[in-house]
Length: 71
Image (cartoon, rainbow, N blue to C red):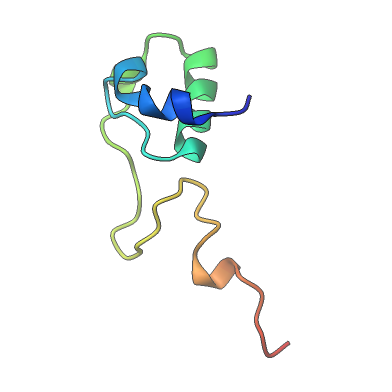
């Protein structure tokens, strides 16, 4: 499943309950809908820890996942 720009433009209409903000979040939402169709009400919020400023659901942009430059 690839997410294109057109899908992202329509994300709020496609997923009106807590719409995804990134293509990666959109992908995960598609997977959720595949296994739990019509159950978006189970999602109370878009979870991200308060102590970070990451915006992607996989958290791969967090600094401690990046290789150490000194090693």
